[in-house]
Length: 195
Image (cartoon, rainbow, N blue to C red; front, side, top):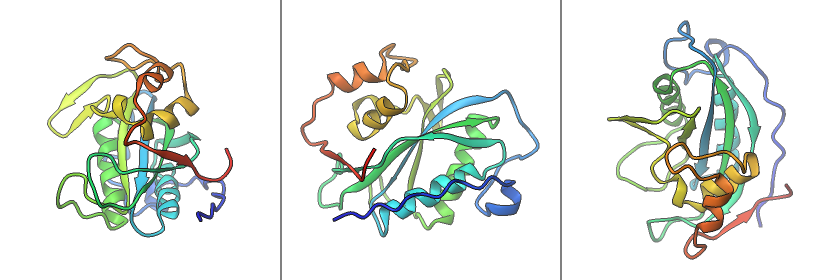
């Protein structure tokens, strides 16, 4: 049985004061963009890991968590013999570039103990930029929209909860339409607690 702990309201502070995992140029701020970030964990106290990561993201200077989906217990996709995940999505407003945001998220993952050995391995925390404004980015270390988001129920269900009419910038389909078209087989998910 999963026990849901209510996340206390995030306390806003400068990243340099509260977040030792912040990396990037804190002085360079561009125009504000809305970004959607997938948050997941399947090691240790999964729910607590996700909540801690969200608090750390909210403490990145020029990055504010605006809304958060509920959390879902989700079946691993693409691998066998792993524990189920806890997944959710947050919407943030940020003045950081997509690359600076990525560097900050990778730093949080490392600071929380994630070690990357192979693709789709179990992880204490996984932070993925799903969307960054309406931008389409295809760089060596960053692809936005996230290339698998439209075929992952554990991403689309929280996206539908946060913004069902948001349009995927490449597929030109709403989050609701993408979710409705997606097969459920092999992608079970269960809400945690009350929504």
